[in-house]
Image 1: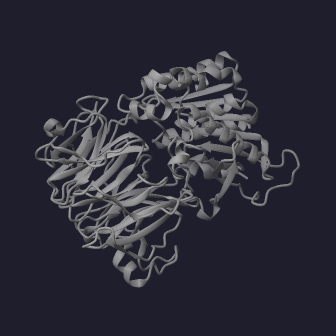
Image 2: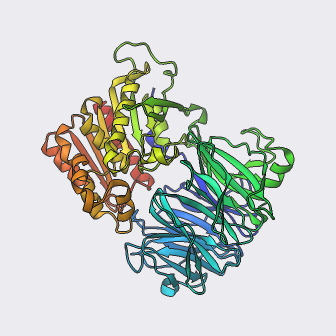
Image 3: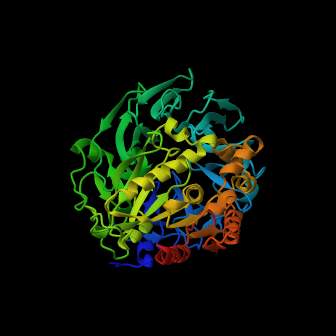
Length: 625
């Protein structure tokens, strides 16, 4: 029985993106109480939070100065992803636009240790590439110094302990990166990781002595391991193996050597907390694991002296909140001594993002399952069933629940058991919910992620079909009421599933999806084209193939009703993708709806738009499913 409206579920709040102030007593975080993420601060666990920004646009990050009561935050306009950097004086509340170049993207690179400067990359000079800039904390506009002209997708990963160098990452694709050290004074760029083929060098952090780096890499393994790179010898030594799973990343305090790294084990987070040896950079001690709810954690931020760190945690039945772990207490007490309900000891929940009055015990858990695909490949996924269907119904036709097959974007992404208000809403309405991680997904090693590259693209669509066939045999599922839903690349997967396997679907919902790979690559942001061609194939070499797999050229095969939603400011998948698939579908008699939002980009960030979008999706599915 339907209990709560979509408005209620979309008013379940999230608190995340934590950063400690310079004194270590104040914490900033992002929370979407007003409908879009804004900056909030609080002075202690469960203290009354203070809202610090008041824009109608989303804030994307916030980072405290290491020395002053001020922080820098990022914000774009209407979802256009051309983020500007702003400084907030935490004492006066005054906000100043530091970049003031709304036609350019700005990618935050961190504060210097003395808090006098900050670094960022931007495509001000050439929209297709990112250059490295350094700017004084009290400078604005075009005062930033361009210290290196890039030739691709550059990101600053942090300042060296002496503030004389910057660690710079260059991405060629999601599975191929390089690392460089950039001398701030001379502009000299030192290439650290020359290699052949696709190799990831990610999550880099300076060692406390500045003579090496910690990073995660798959240089010699299929999955990511934690490693140490000696800047003198350039040798890379494994510090901790992922044991068949990815080490997602490391957060390191470069003054104390204390760290937190995470392993992604079938979508669930396993944290390791410890400290590196002062004399031997690959040696470390570990502390007991913190006891956190939910199963998926990240976004670690150390406080001063690394005596504690903040992170966000979430789960199927746990909306996202910020917790603080006391490292000294963790180390001395043998681990967290509290339950998730009585918070004492090493772990404390600091934020109180509400659940809109919906009892958390009504949220449904998902189960990890594995489905054998057409070629024997095991495809993992998460299946949640509505209340009353835990054991399945009988085999009577029509007795099972309808199911939403929600396909993630990326494609190098991964669906994990984190909280989703949309998923819980549909579960409350009596739908089952299935989230597959088809070939091409991240989290399962480089080989798995590459199985859908270019000419193998449609094998991932066949994985979706195998999952639907598996669902059709499940006693709790009605095989005649299966819905395909997905966003971005997941939107392409919806359209491709409807055209390649039309008999499987009762309806399709395409959110900001790719309909035509040729027009998508022609019109996506200049800075993204090379990255996307590395995954999908190039216009120059693979145009014929890209045309053959584009759903726009197979619309006549669609049998199920289709709903297409898009943001008019989308810089990644331009709105023309939605317009052309709707036009073609209508011409061929496919029942199709279109809903565009003039103040959104790649997805829907504003609460009123999300309410409208998912209310309309629910009504569409009520009509057709």
